[in-house]
Length: 208
Image (cartoon, rainbow, N blue to C red; front, side):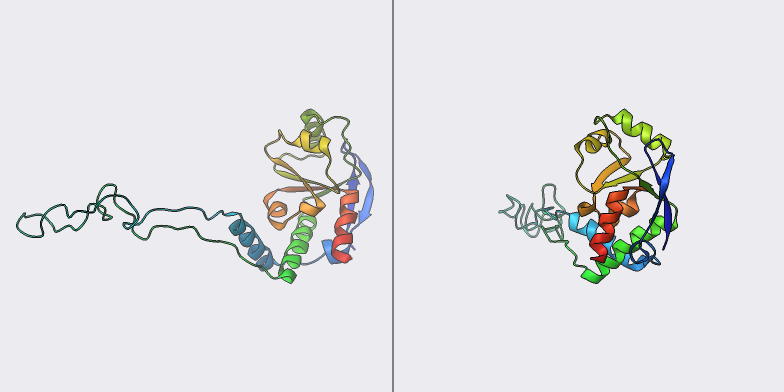
């Protein structure tokens, strides 16, 4: 079983925790992670874009000039694509971009993402994350003590109002809970900061 150090908010070692081999000790499956991330991003697309074809723009009912004898190219409508205010060729229309991913692939991708953070030494386990107030300065001080400088994902077992408020003003830090955790967020942030009870909850979900 992989073992990882546990830290407090002052950046001091507060013990260690044994992680489940089946959750945090797998060999990352890059293909599964890629498939799930692509699907997540595709499913976020609204697909509401729409442009008008020549049959949908207003006007153009009358032929602009006669077919022959003017010396100009023949035209049937002033709403053809080559005209100003004309319709769009192959106009985009509303569509559903949703992609489905097999449940086993989603599970493998999540476990691979979690394991990759452990193997790359990007996972930090906190003894607890109880802030007296939802102050950004408190969270900034804690991150500095932990040596976190880049993008960070902070995961708690349950919703914590103080933590969310403290993080909301930090552009490179995002707060999540175990039940909202996803592959894209894990891979998108450099550091994966998770509380000890959240680790237990993750293992309960994927081993239960």
